[in-house]
Image (cartoon, each protein chain N blue to C red):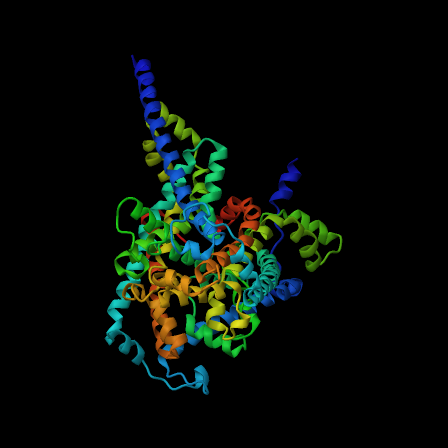
Length: 305
Length: 315
């Protein structure tokens, strides 16, 4: 009796389960489409003739395929300069961040270092409370960071989350390795460079790539801490285009405007789409490499919350 | 064997502080850049918050400027702007921190049920992607997609026989919907990672037992998976609550248009407007200080409540 009942239960459960499974697949496919289709539309628009696109009716395949938008973007010197600035800040900023973060993580890993607890508390506290935008701005000014390239690099040198991630990872490296190196006469610097760094590639990759993405995507520093538009990173240049378009309500007049531009096949809008694609491609290129470390990074981060 | 165990248990006595200070000197050298960073870029500005009580003059600096007491706070709370700003900030904070909160958990639960590993991996790759796009890029895309007549949303509406000329970004009515969908679109996948990691540590024997007892998938999710990850949920909720009053200046700044200005004006945006752009440093600092303190109090209180109820705590 009871076995047949269990059996009956199981069949019923299986039928319900299959239905639920089906719904889950459906929802996830829909979600993925909702993420991909808008991106695809923008990509297609960047490859379509600008004036033609202003007539509307472009979905997921270009109607009048052209590379003019991209040609114009690459010919526009200001965007290429901005690209250079973005690359410089990403490379320099990421390198310095990694150096400082790993050195600090290595020191803070030593539990009986006098002052360790106090320092950790002070550093973590900055996550909960900060000086606010204006006092920070005044401090940048006092440090002569405003309107200099370093305003892109210095403010984001160390992040509490990444520092804790690095320290947690270092703590997982067996002490015995360090001890034996010390017996061989290695000092702390030697242990740091020859043991800690080579063994920490996963965490260095995660933190480095996250930092690089943050640098690449930042527009705020350029917009508010840098007066000279020729020293803006590419995201700030894009933001400037965007804000101008929003306040001028260009969208409403895009057709008439496109007609007014005469022989040119590109419009401000189509150029913007090309710029978006050009700016996003580097992220898409490194994305597969970061992805490998996602779960790992989340786990290390989760330990210390 | 016995001696080996004893050796494992043996711990060298802590050296006196003076000896450790000498021994660890290279470590202190390695800490210098980090300490200098936090001192100069976090703690000096924190002390600079006294600006909220001073009439800032560029020549005299923060410390030389004359005191004005609580004048700025009075001015702010008496001002015509204050109720609107606070209401906007709270609304957006609730949308971002509370309304969006469950979705990442639901996505993680769904991803966990997918047995086809290839499909799962592709789905994860796609859903994590928007997190890596900058807010400028996302807003530019939104502007294009929601454009009147030529944007794909309006084209779809026309194709279905509706009126395809709505300028969504210029109409205040659509502002919260746009904000909610955009933020969810960007973060749902990324936020689900941490829940997925937590789910993977739930004991699988529990599921088998429940299946024997005739629990379907939904029941198993509700009675086993969710209780299994309640610690993670609690922690992330506490951290989210701290952001209730400071929902980020970047998005708002970019999404602001003449049409939705009445709703998109938050405290963060206001600080940038009157402080960085308007030069009223003392006044803007005061508003920033209120935000910071309220955020701190919220986190501490929420942490206390959570600790009492679920024994989950940030510290």
